[in-house]
Length: 180
Image 1: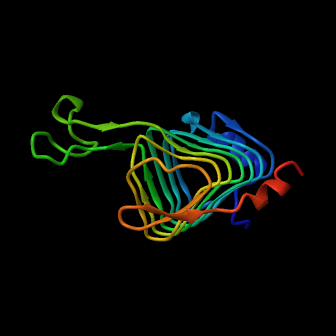
Image 2 (image 1 turned 180 degrees about the vertical axis):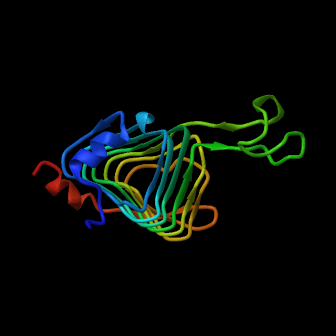
């Protein structure tokens, strides 16, 4: 048995759209597939969770154990990737004590906030990062392993830390390959 779904199996899952050459692990969990779009040349590895409104461009790799919680939207543009054990949240509960927490509580008793998370072209998020809602990691930026991203990041930078901070500029040399 192949570790990835066949094309016909992918089509039966019911994605909003799906490109060519998509490899989705049979061990990944997909919730609300009708709200998920996958571009071409996408690979999603074992034990990933995809839930909510998610748009993945082309030439994207989602490593093992990544969780994409797209309740308010996640967009991952072309030539980007998310490394193992990273979690991206587009919505979060209010832990302040005035509301209940969790999806099993009635909506009127919770206070969920957030907004779309954007990973622009040529972005790479390192292993074991946490990315919070309502922000953008702009074109060409990379985030080092085990970083906490709680704000938008400018383009073509190398970032790391808890909370994340800019370390230096990143080379734009990879743009030579963008129009193969």
